[in-house]
Length: 276
Image 1 (cartoon, rainbow, N blue to C red):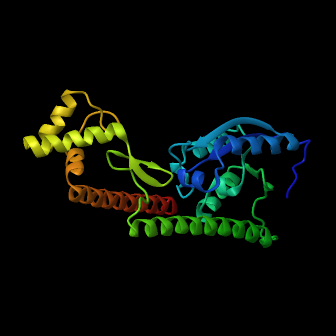
Image 2 (image 1 turned 180 degrees about the vertical axis):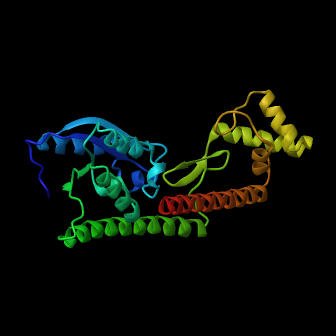
């Protein structure tokens, strides 16, 4: 571990990041990250001048995001560029970036601006030196194993969900109307179950379709599952499991399309950077 010179008092920015997936896996939240950084800084004798955050406890920011997609990180780098800070302090390199390519890009950017990089679990990460290739190799190997560990965890979680779904159990996703997830299992939600029974009664006894039922619910100011207004598609899912399966398939295709578009956008940004 590199121990900074206590007589050299630097202006550091604490960089925190959380992703929803990371929270499930290790529970290393924003407060814990900042606490570790401040503990290290107390011993090091530097001055924390700012704290930036990417993601929050409900909607995280993935460590695979490119630098310009990390609003908090970009703010910290801007402080270094404007000479308002001397370097960054993260709890560990995994919190700085989950993927090795992003990690190395962030470090190169900070060093190019004359900044310095510290982590609470290691101390200072010195700039690459052609006379010390082992320094670069060791840092990058740590990044590789961080990335591998996260990938294996995600695979185990995905395999477990798929196995449970194959057995007919509740695996993931939003519970259907009238149900709630308790300890990984779907159970009836009484208030919603009563509304679900009423919807089926209107359909079976009065012959109402999704749109009239939707209109009746909204007129009566009955809230939908997430609050707000009812939509005919939601009613159709309640009345027909087939409609729910079709809607779920459509949602999966939309997510895959958005993921592909995001991947293409990142690739175009990287190409533009290299062209410039």
